[in-house]
Length: 67
Image (cartoon, rainbow, N blue to C red; front, side, top):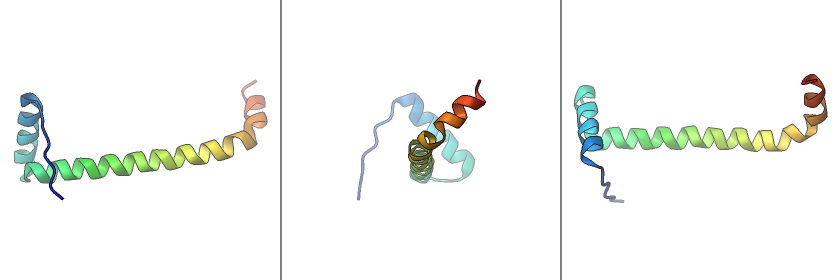
């Protein structure tokens, strides 16, 4: 699926420089950045779910440890 990405001039120039330095296209750099963003946030969401499920079970013990 095609997508149009609008960047300000400064960001576009920085992207072009980064892509040139890596020997990649600007599109490749953006696709990699998006994939990394999705992966990082997916992991953070998973950690948040575990914490939401498990922290209440150990709340009293954690409170006592903090005293």
